[in-house]
Image (cartoon, rainbow, N blue to C red; front, side, top):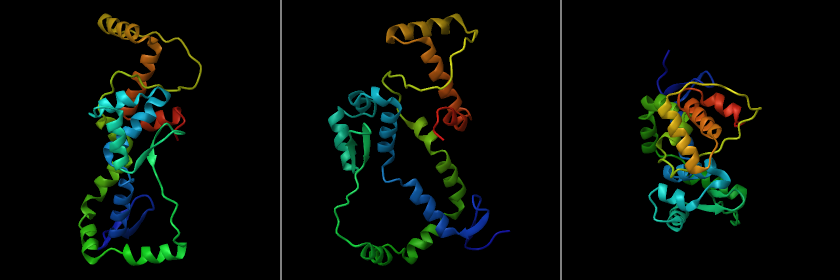
Length: 214
């Protein structure tokens, strides 16, 4: 069954106005930070305490960390020393009363008829927008430039067990050379390789649960 002017909301199992659905999706996609800036924030999160602003700046084609900082500030993102990452700065200095702000929102931010028509035209694209939104983290990971060699660290819970595997002599030699050159344990490489594999090929939710992200 299809109702004109409405679209099916699979989450709530009911029909909702198409304008409301489109507006909600677009608002959620626009998190307040440009996509490139969001990728930079995610890189800092992944590297944690080992994050090197200079290396991260170069990996995103900035000349140095100062240019990276200027770019982030131009997007209203500032360095948070507690989080050791960039974050949106919210200005709470305004003296506007809550009721005045509510009136301002009601008057200024009401969509025009032209905007409503534009939102209605997005109805055919709502399924793909929903899909992109549900896989936002995976898309960011896939689109991020390759790091300059810094290995991400994952705090995998549970005790260690011995697991014998067979691999080609050439791969074994490459892994040994890589670990020796970067002073790493082979277990670190295996952990990262498996986690990245699972995240990319259908086990994102299971990996998030394992790492305590959900």
